[in-house]
Length: 127
Image (cartoon, rainbow, N blue to C red; front, side):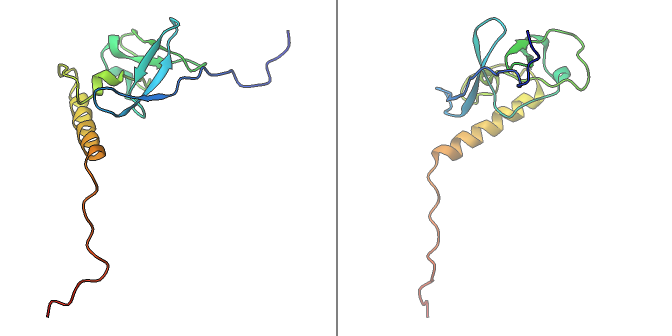
């Protein structure tokens, strides 16, 4: 067996739209040969997230729930989109999550609202 000269192959996941709010969510493989839908571009410090909600990415791109308590202070994790989805009723698990859900609600509303009318290039002569 030789030395691997390439980077490890990452499992493909992709993105899909949430059926509740319409925002994108990352589809990521788990170590248990399953899939989880995670909030994109959100990597909070693991110690700020309850143990049962910490998803840690391993070297091949899969994720697993990270139950070490307390985690290393610099460890980052991911959370499921359903926790940040503004269209799903959930308890207030953490203060920063409430802020994220509020921001996602505003983003979803902006996504649905048509662009406001722009003023004409030249204004008519008003006298």
